[in-house]
Amino acid sequence: MRSAGSSAGAPIRVLIVDDHPGFRQAARALLAARGFAVVAETDCAVGALHVAARLEPDAVLLDVRLGEESGHEVARALTRLRPAPAVLLVSVCDPGDGEARALACGARGFVLKGRLAATDLARFWPRGPGRR
View 1: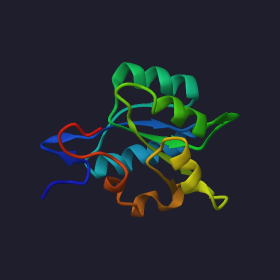
View 2: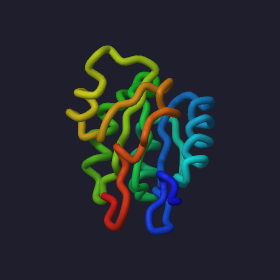
View 3: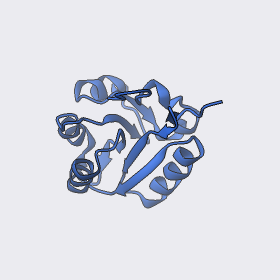
View 4: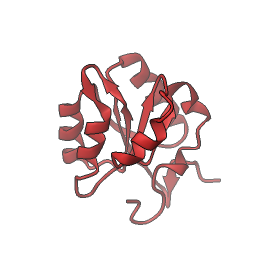
């Protein structure tokens, strides 16, 4: 049986962007357990754009709030990269329009951090040849 994070033997390569080290650590463990390959972590917008341009991850797990920086703006910039990663926005709270705002900035969706472990990430992140 193939894991949710793998396709044709190659795991989906993920960049984690969050300003809380504890969440990055938990997300890394969760993604690894599901067969995803976490290629890097960063805690800020500049780092996210730099690492994404250099490593070209298939997917990005991106916090809506990065201190004073907006994850929505980072998502817009990431989805303009070529190749563009599949961005999934996460947050500890949803003001009610989290999904709509995520889609409006080019992300594939929005998930509450507390529900990440129960979420089928294959709904948001690419699988198969040409994953993007």
